[in-house]
Image (cartoon, rainbow, N blue to C red):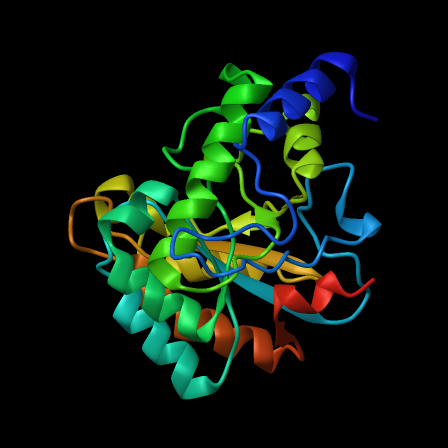
Amino acid sequence: MVDTGRRTALAALLAAGLLPCAGARAANGARVPSAPHPPASLLGSEIRRLPTSRKVVALTFNAAWDEAGIDTVLAELRRRGLPATFFPTGAFADAHPGAVRAIGAAHGLGNHSYSHPYFEDLSTAQRVQEVRRADAAIRTASGAEPLPFFRFPYSATTRDSVADVNDLGYAAIEFTADTNGYLGPQGGMSVETAAERAIDALAPGAIIQMHVGSNGDGVVLDAEALPLIIDAAEADGYTITDLRAFLVP
């Protein structure tokens, strides 16, 4: 249920033209199709495990820093013919449009905000601006239709912030486990420990979070851990699933 303050803020932003309606036009004049709306099973709360009893696991990658691991990750997924979902920030899309275009050509693109702030510190209007500014940047960089999936920066969710992104037509897709590979060797992580965190979390509907950037040190442990994670999941009878399959009720 949308409270009065949130409804008023959303209505004001729509009237101001800050929220694109169905069939809006992109900057190049092309009509932008509306993304499929998430089914009810993905709304109302943050999603940390997909609603299924099947032995499937989703691979997801955040992109907010550099692009050091993207070529390796995309090559491994292409070699195996496997899907993944990527969550770039809008700032990343502006800084690395070629990388986002390459990702969007092969995989689904979610939304990770524009500037990666703590959403609990923002008003509804500020949250809307973060989401929509990121959406515009991702569209421009990729030339693709982003998915109606939002991932909160720092995975810092609140009831109100989840409701706000739901009201914008996004499911709040978080994760069952983060490999913590982004911490790098200086943070006490290794390829093996990153892979183990994902493998230990395997369960029907598990969502694994990884990162494609090096966070400044040039080492992308998640890119190196990816083959180990896939091998272990498949050996245990899991199928790598595409988050887009869960847009169908």
